[in-house]
Length: 169
Image 1 (tube, rainbow, N blue to C red):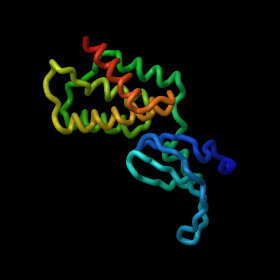
Image 2 (cartoon, helix red, strand yellow):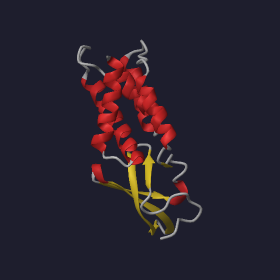
Image 3 (cartoon, helix red, strand yellow):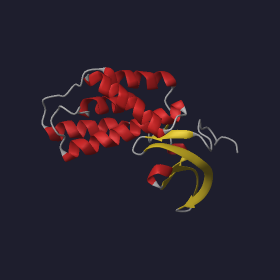
Image 4 (tube, rainbow, N blue to C red):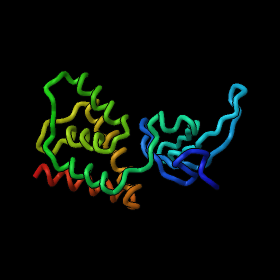
């Protein structure tokens, strides 16, 4: 199947959709919606058992992008080695910032959230909302690292965990 008109994406490509993470384009189909014919990307998020349809004309404006390059993955992993930067702002404000970074789809921003929210065994316990944001960011990060490396998610998870524990030591 050929690439959609004027698009950098084609079926079987892995892409990043900012609000959902890594997905795979399974098809490009035409549908009539409210009397208007539209060309749509059909994107499958297997892990979430979800299918999303995005108009090809809107793909760029919603922030859909190709997987990060290996250079950007390396920069993101390098970010994990840095010191956690936790602002002294109220938790609700920080949580909002973390949520924005996660949903931006930017791999380095997601790595910053993982780094800032990571807790080693000797540190205080995370609150429920901290843990939720941390797990969401970690999942997005490891899925993209796995997709770029061609490794499995478990291998990517181990790689990220190793970097975080080495930093804490």
